[in-house]
Length: 83
Image (cartoon, rainbow, N blue to C red; front, side, top):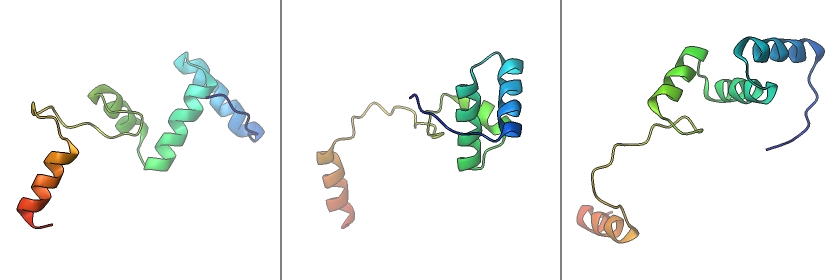
């Protein structure tokens, strides 16, 4: 998504340098840093999430159990549990 933000000069220079070191765009650096700040993750944890196949939200999906979870199945489970 394209947007315009105002950065303080020191933050701009830091992002620009990180982008240069990592050979990525400044937008990618800002997005990564925002995700880390909002989720409390460290750079090391962020790399581990990327390697594990987590989505952009940082959640790792459960492995498939071969069953499609439908609203009907959820309703049956609620009825059986008395929820």
